Length: 209
Image (cartoon, rainbow, N blue to C red):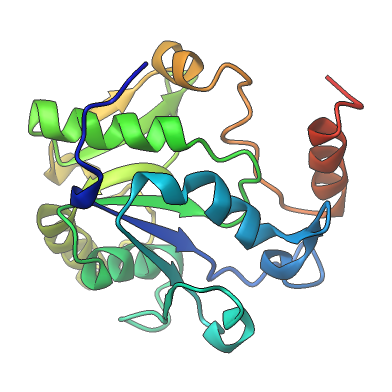
């Protein structure tokens, strides 16, 4: 599926703010088949955007990345604070947000998400799986409208990443569309622990289905 979106309208923001408590170490920096995991995510997705930012609470650890590193604009708010930071610090109309722990992140899904915002006038293009599960850290947002809605949610002490979605226009990218864009079905495979990490490497090497 070919997107017609002008990539100069898109900023890519990689979220790297998690504490990796279940991993026992900073998974952002763990080497995935020889490459830091965050660099792998960056290489897979950078082609869709004119600007790339990384949101991290420890930006000094990511100095090797040749992109802009920013810390949370509003401290202590967790993942939703990181999402607000993405909207606050990005400069493009559309903001593609992806988590650093998605080794099979799909540039095609993000690219089509931006295209859908451009075509439909929606504020968010977000994958929704099994009719119930949203993927807010593999989605695309209209910067200004989403920044305001997220800020209102934070001010109301709402911590869920999707708590503010009812206040904006949402285009849900269903499983059929996501499968067309990502035939492997692995785009949302996230790494929470070392078992996940090992499995992802085995998948990449073709050692498992």
